[in-house]
Length: 222
Ligand SMILES: CC(=O)N[C@H](C=O)[C@@H](O)[C@H](O)[C@H](O)COP(=O)(O)O
Image (cartoon, rainbow, N blue to C red; front, side):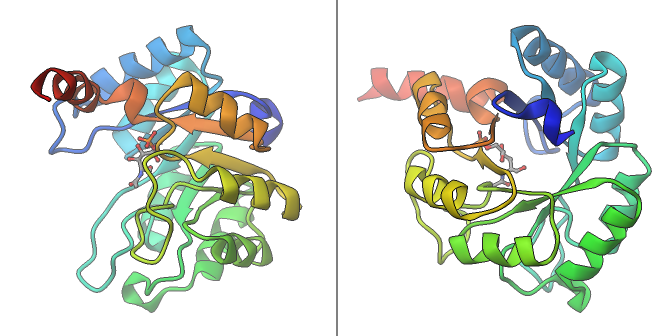
């Protein structure tokens, strides 16, 4: 999959049960629209959405499952259970949180990575710091993504992408660095590629109308 996305745009089509567009049918159509707009792959959450998106678009999918566990702050593909559910979907790549935080059930990142790679599926490490990215490379992941920057209480809280981190990772790492998280405009997208991103994933700015509307409404209410 990585060879197919080099230099390209991926779109994240996700809507959890508490979001207005929560529905595999709707996420399938959202992915179709993204495909028509030029997305070469889709990041999708949950077995039903992944299956629908693969059926509707035929595009490669980065799959994840968001699930909360009482004993951990990690919710993106936290345990073996989510890994096995995702492996059954046939998604080409699996994204898992690889931030340096306690995992549910005391499971290790290494065991999850090994299980995925054994099935010849690529692993995308969602990280929030430079150090977490370096650690993920040591664990044998295929690519890292800046997904969690600003979402761990020790990482850089910025309005937009962390361009400096993307630049440093792209310069230092031997594996692809995907820019993801808070890419809010086409200018941001151009900027992350200029910083050296291998590929980029845009979500909310394209697929969460409730957030897009909020940005417009905020201007009027000011
Ligand atoms: C923090 C977290 O859980 N991020 C999730 C990761 O799968 C998604 O909800 C994001 O939409 C995706 O990463 C794209 O980011 P943005 O929506 O900012 O373009």
